[in-house]
Image 1 (cartoon, one colour):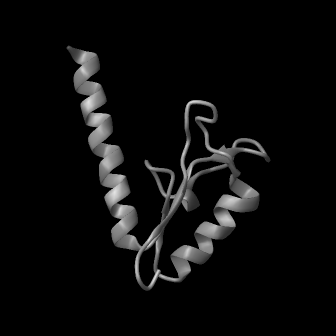
Image 2: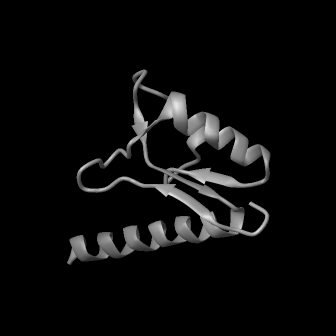
Amino acid sequence: LLYGGVFGYPGDTKNPNGKLRLLYEGAPMSFIVEQAGGLSTTGFERVMEVTPEIVHQRVPIIMGSKNDVQEVIDAYAEACVKKEDTVET
């Protein structure tokens, strides 16, 4: 967190919801990272704001220093806008 960097376990085609479980892995790590001054996201929302629907719910995770994670969030947003533009045409 001091020098930057990102830990990521995003969703992919095989595991669109990611592989880390929200209650056991995602939320505890996100809490620690955010308390240390970092940021943790699913790519679309803060991990700490995800309301679990089932006990073993999985979420994609991207966490690390604020600036680096913000770049990832911006890239996700840009990719979504491009995807929407492609779908509309």
